[in-house]
Amino acid sequence: MLDVPNSDLQSLANPNNAGQWVQTNVLNFYPAVNIKYIAVGNEVKPVGDSTSWMAQYVLPAIQNVYQAIRAKGLHDQIKVSTAIDMTLIGTSYPPSKGSFRSDVRSYLDPIIGYLVYANLPLFANVYPYFSYVGDPNDISLPYALFTAPNVVVWDGSRGYQNLFDAVLDSVHAALDNTGIGYVKVVVSESGWPSDGGFAATYDNARVYLGNLIQHVKGGTPMRPNVAIETYLFGMFDENQKSPEVEKHFGVFYPNNQKKYPFNFGFSAARHWEDDIVAIKNASVSLRSDA
Image 1 (cartoon, rainbow, N blue to C red):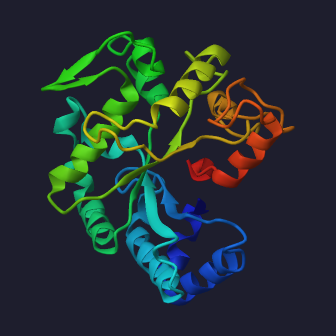
Image 2 (image 1 turned 45 degrees about the horizontal axis):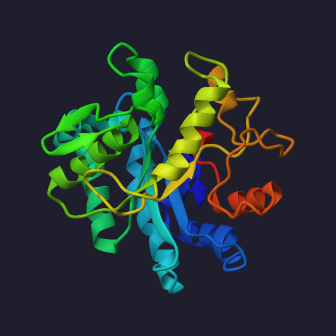
């Protein structure tokens, strides 16, 4: 997954610049590098944020990058979209009532329409950690860590045993409730910090990530029996991030040492070093602009 930095959005709203960007960053490396997705902007917030002025460029940049990819006949191999965060969801409970905030619909609806037209997914950054630390009185830690022994939330006939599914299904519902058309959701980021803040411990991070890896094979109550394509955040701890908690999301230490004992579904006979290569080839962090 390649990221177009938010700082490049205005430039890529020009078709010529987008074509050059695709040549330089995609075509010069593909297919030797297996590029599956291009995220055009990350967590751009159209209202009340330092990134809001960039919002006007997101859809034109998506369109231009997509057309440059399509011109090379690669639009079925390399999908183009943008990554949103959960602050754009106005109603998330119960999940089936999920909806986008009214003040961001004029930004999102045209993007969703284009994703439907071009058969592109929406990228969503899903962090039960931040939901939990924002409301620890009403959200239990086991619900956030996939360790609740029973259903915690009933939404009609659907039972939710973990917060990840509930948040993700609120995005599914928000998309469905626009009435624009079906859009697949790819979880472009999910993770848990191992230090630096409330509930940010090594054990919590280990449990969350290990359970997430196993859980996404099975789908959500709203989209059952369909694996959830999910990317972990992040590859490495980053010592220049702030606040402190943002420094500790890495699956690996900066020296390439594993932080956690789990693997990613590979044969137990394989070495962890092989897993590192596979993960490095599969995932690139999108959170540089967050």
